[in-house]
Image 1 (tube, rainbow, N blue to C red):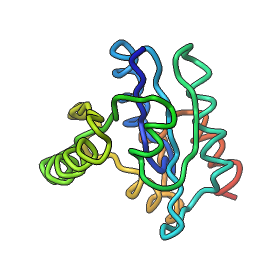
Image 2: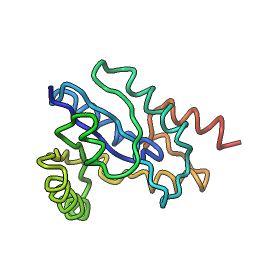
Image 3: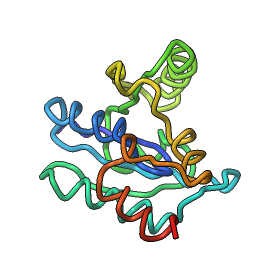
Image 4: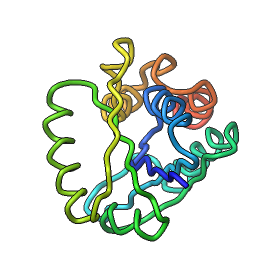
Length: 159
């Protein structure tokens, strides 16, 4: 069985994330959306909120599940018998960074492979970091997040 992990903070999940999920589905028997928990990182949305959003995405697909983990992604991959990581590339900077990480993951993860998806041009500017900044400034993020997240944000953050 080909199992892949799509690791991230998903703070928040964007249409770019959803695109990567959908593009990865034909390649793998199972895709795990894995929320990494880093005690050094400050998140805008709670873990519970990010899990709820990902569950709404996963519900649409038979072979997608949600998990959380702490520590190295390669160690989590071993616990779920995943042989692949899914990563998106928006630009050359992403490539340089992700290439190095994938090489280290391959060594430490004893053959763990990273599958890269190049962002479609209309999504190459979208990042959770930029979306968070727009949210903090009470701007409209409708074009950058799934509809249900936009509705949730309006009810909770735009009062």
